[in-house]
Image (cartoon, rainbow, N blue to C red; front, side):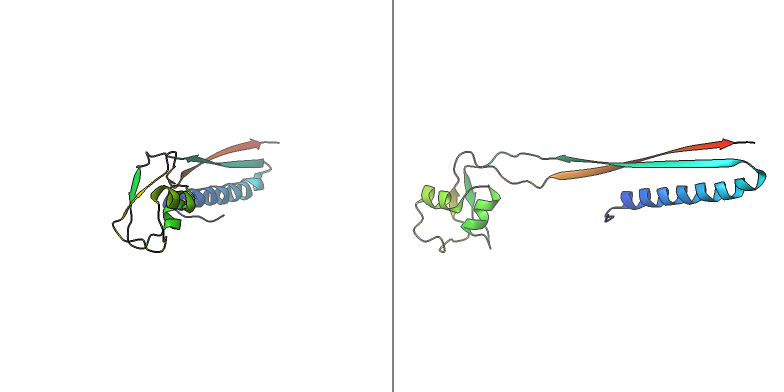
Length: 128
């Protein structure tokens, strides 16, 4: 598991600190004849949401773009763009050119993933 954000680090440290405290408490409480059992449960829930944005009917070529990269951006085959725009030489694409996109094109938007963690603990002690 790779920890990326501050919240994930804080949750991981909190779980470790709680676990350490539970172990220390069980060791310190064990000398008077009482037994302590500690159960800690941590669950992570990840949700992914995908946003859709309206696709323009044309795309203005930016520096460094190719018909292939534009096709990937809109989930369209490069051949469909070439055919729709009657492009003779796909390698002669200039910055500022306007390219028509096939209807039904879908822009790729990076999915947003959020992770939340919950921690619960059950501590049971019994005396002789």
